[in-house]
Length: 457
Image (cartoon, rainbow, N blue to C red):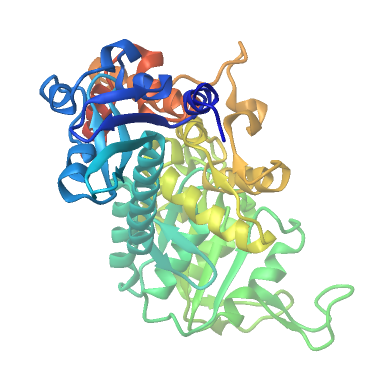
């Protein structure tokens, strides 16, 4: 047999709140854990009736009274007003010899963290569901790539490209910084054009040696130069006849080749190196560059007549730092692709996403993709956190870039962003809204209201 003193010591040591009442609901015993859950002292509970505690709004409901009335074990989720905790209370009746309820054994367990975790999981699942839907809505399938257009500025680029694509004869000039996705926009033009099933050939004008570029573009006859194929060779334009030629980095084309390209565009004929007979061609030309062609024209580095011949329709792609709405969808897309590539299950922590949004991305989408692949490979564990980011994401004093400080915003918006970041950081560190509220010195309802208000914007 366990002596009464030892039994009380065991009940007192329980992690759960325990209290025992008589058959009328008057408290005979309460351990320290129960008093702590209610936000009162044990002395405040002893001898009190359950009805009295209900009237004082110590807790929201009583399973003890229900167990007395129904004469069976009862469980219910209740709310403790003083501590703002959600608890699972179970009341078990203990019967006398005549079937009367002699005692009620009450067990109370804090499930606030569990509820917060479940709510967080539901929120994350909903966010993931919405983002996946948005991602599918934003994706424009191409031959080898995917364009993600969430921002208004990039949606306009896509709409313009799709509209221009149907005008089959129009030459298009795509302008934008390195890594913005000029090749993908070119593919978008082709896949929405009447030539989508015809040849589509690409060449980087800056990657071919100057002494070979003419033969690459226009071909050569047999014996045209030392080492030439005895059968001759079709050039890019001839091989793409009926289809599309994409001249990437057109700003790197040498001046003497600019003259010959202009003649091809005007006459729709090419003459092979070493040949004399012009060959009729029917190709659509799409050109792209990250250089300022107008300035190059003024400086005599690019022919003005070729510039106007190429610039029938121009498509200007904004840099990633000017379309921050695309960053998170791009992160999600590339993370999925890289996880599949390396058979990993990496995720990105919330404060890390803030850092991605605040970084200026001089290398644009290509840099974002490369950074993410590097992080998936080098980050230990399955969660990419802010401390895993490369040094370029950190300021000179070793601190992360401040939220929203890379752009000038209304003071109210800036304050809201900083406030939300502080709340999210506190929740991440403390593990629950209640503990985060205590650390920040505010009521939990304030945190919930501010977070909800941010979601609705």
